[in-house]
Length: 441
Image 1 (cartoon, rainbow, N blue to C red):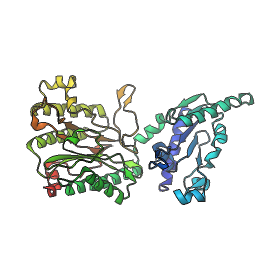
Image 2 (tube, rainbow, N blue to C red):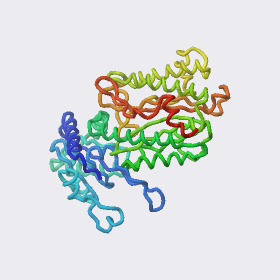
Image 3 (cartoon, one colour):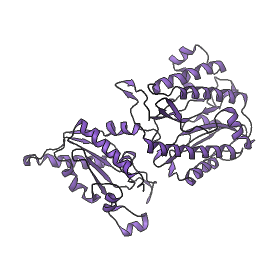
Image 4 (cartoon, helix red, strand yellow):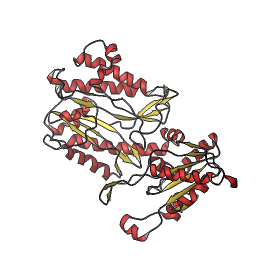
């Protein structure tokens, strides 16, 4: 359990109270914990708390519910009861007392009391912040509580008349990272850097992709990372052209490129890094040409990150650089502007350049405001990750290009004066990659 920085969670709840009250003082937020998902038979998947729930509490136990009352500025937690018998099997629980003493709840009750207490917590409040559609059984529970209140109207009790997604406030808060969050993200980046450097130095022809994945996961865990931030992609040769390749079971051939897209999670914050390097031999001329083009586009994209810029502008810039370069290499033919307009480049570059990064690897926060791309602000963190993928079976290109897949990705913080690359230092230039992977040759 994370009881560090308890004042951080209290400040976040206070900021949410302020934002809720500014819109409607008569408001309450209801946030359930993440559900437990069965893996098979009586085994569950590893539990990870819902990011919104953890952001406001630091509490990582399942079957919990947080209720925040903006009018009274009161946080109520419903938690699992202490149970010595179950704790022998599953580990200690905070219980009602721990919820208050260690996690700052103003009131706490056991989860079984939710049905009785929830209507009372909602009564005489006009608005409920709750995300409908995620957990249908909890949707029903909330709606039953509201319906119960409607039956009390003759007693002078009113029921909420509005249900609003808490993300309209909460996800905007999460989009701008504070010092504690950035500390966690920098730590995640440092661990991820070591993992990628180790993979570059130890990968050899003939190894299986999963052996490289094991190095990454070992490094993450040894440094206190709770888990990878997402399923690691370790794609060799033609597998580098599969964007979400996850099988990681192929033998790596000499002279092939290995694309590794892997990052750890630390303190509930993600890192997201991709590097591509040759195994067993130096870059071939074609591999290096594609690599240098992707790197040029990535560096230009990073350079464009600054307050006032937009993710759309960064994407357009990388698309133009990649398209111009692919015409030069002979992968595409025609006028650059026309190729962009008709999206012909998507044959080789089919994804976007950036996404938000934070507690979730594809983090929350609106990309458009009032129909227009939102402008970047200090404290936002995004990825910059252009790539080129020439399908192995693409008969329309010269055979020497087929099966080459390259992506380069870093995590970038928007600063008041420009940007900070949180994942800087992981070998990236051709010379750096050559040196880092020299042992494989």
